[in-house]
Image 1 (cartoon, protein in one colour):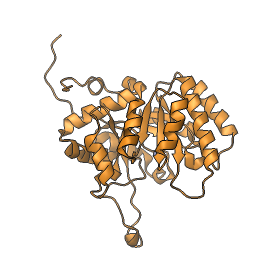
Image 2 (image 1 turned 180 degrees about the vertical axis):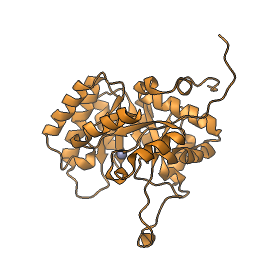
Image 3 (image 1 turned 90 degrees about the horizontal axis):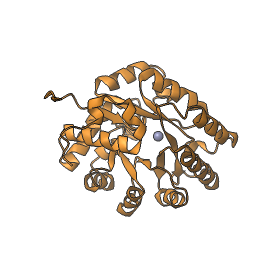
Image 4 (image 1 turned 30 degrees about the horizontal axis):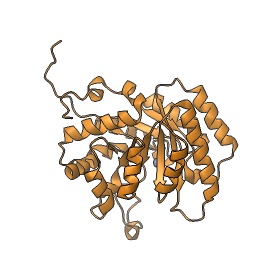
Length: 292
Ligand SMILES: [Zn+2]
């Protein structure tokens, strides 16, 4: 078979986008279309609560994207215990859905004050066990909570996944990597003062970084509106079409070409969430010519 020499445009994967968020109610279809036009071939839509399980699945099917099912630590307080049963039922009902790629967004938040930490812990551990049982990777929310997350991962072995918006120490990063996790980098990396995030993005092994927007949250530096400007300008909304521009920061930090950045981060996303392979355009999955 002869390979035709041709370089298709890079295809990006936004490994973390809340397309179901109310911020997108007015123009969700346009947001999805802009992302695709910008070369973001896939997005992973993690649910944050049981009421969103059907919504993210419908959106993923409607727009040709991927989704994850889980209860976010910041939602654990309002969630009912029965929501864990709803999660289990949804994972069982859709276990053969190729667009269901992970259990998430789950995890621990030790930053927001006043949360019920024991309840967060219980929801997180229960959902790790579900991921283990269904053989799915997990998408982790980690905010000042890396050690707590790792403590449970040592007890409950899951098939890896992504620690999203990672902002831990070098040692914590190494522990996640040892457990087969990829680390998510997004808008926060575009701020020059984000020294530790940029250090990690530059220094981690090639096989570790994946890209994400966390849209509508974590606006990159060029969309950010300072608190003292917010009377004059509306708060900024991040969107998945920003991913290729965010990726330029990763490319600069690592000394990669933009094409290499797309190929490598896509390959890393597929390694973290293997079901993505079945959803990608063929040239994006098989990174021909990628130096090892
Ligand atoms: Zn999120």
